[in-house]
Image 1 (cartoon, rainbow, N blue to C red):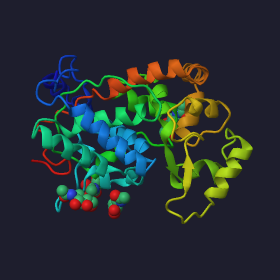
Image 2 (image 1 turned 120 degrees about the horizontal axis):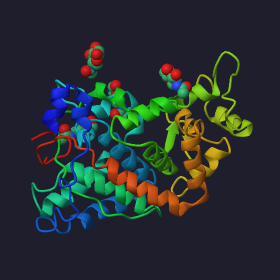
Image 3 (image 1 turned 120 degrees about the vertical axis):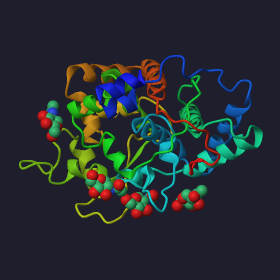
Image 4 (image 1 turned 180 degrees about the horizontal axis):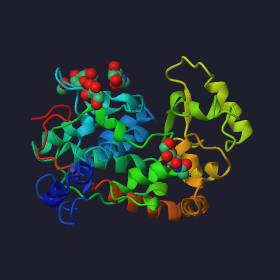
Length: 318
Ligand SMILES: *[C@@H]1O[C@H](CO)[C@@H](O)[C@H](O)[C@H]1NC(C)=O
Ligand SMILES: *[C@@H]1O[C@H](CO)[C@@H](O)[C@H](O)[C@H]1NC(C)=O
Ligand SMILES: *[C@@H]1O[C@H](CO)[C@@H](O)[C@H](O)[C@H]1NC(C)=O
Ligand SMILES: *[C@@H]1O[C@H](CO)[C@@H](O)[C@H](O)[C@H]1NC(C)=O
């Protein structure tokens, strides 16, 4: 499969060919690290107690990892003297809580040294973040390897909050992900927070006619403008992506249908019938949302990164 991709000459294809069904498995560490999942969950749970933004951060981190070079832990690597890493690339304002992965890795290394990849730990931590926030629990296929490449410039390949539906569709389909995956994974915004800079385009100087994006509910837009004035200088200012930010639920979709979404890329889901129908379906049924979310998470978290090692410290290559 990989050789074929090289022949096709497409770096994108090479990086994102989903791992073949056999590559990851549910029982991957059953013999070599039986207490793995218990240790990771412990680290996530402890961190959440002190900081309720940890679940959103872990989910975001995993998504970011998988969308760049596949799920290979590249997002966890520190910059070095010669290389600026992904985590220091432009959208890094949304990334934090790397220490949670460090703590989980330390706990795991103490039991089974050199066995479990950082990419697997991140996939498990993201699942735990969802489950511990009242969302679904699912079994995570494991066996990812850690990559050695992490480039700040690659963050330009992430779907941007300003994307319209065709840009979103292209970004997802390049990774083998469908429109249903797009709508289901957008539901991860139920736990998110956005800085003003990522939705400024909707509330100031929207276009030559309107100052504010007319698809926004007027009173909601007014609230956002209060928190994020035109020349906002408060770096931490912004808005949660739904009003129940610590609870994994389908409120995000309900708000979206009322014109109360934060990003252009959220509103974009209402601009074509297919994705709009899915938004309505998930707004009506938490159960349908959870089912679709789990399916899409497993698909996304199986994007192969072609990593080859098990790091000892998630921030440095071996
Ligand atoms: C990685 O970077 C963080 C933040 O700059 C720093 O605190 C940490 O010591 C670094 N870790 C390693 C192993 O280089
Ligand atoms: C984000 O990246 C910039 C370089 O683009 C760097 O100067 C800054 O320290 C990074 N911020 C965080 C929070 O990592
Ligand atoms: C990113 O790419 C641009 C042009 O392709 C280059 O000028 C720049 O040095 C690169 N930055 C990093 C951090 O690699
Ligand atoms: C989305 O944006 C791209 C780039 O600006 C543009 O070419 C395309 O026509 C837009 N598509 C839609 C559906 O608005």
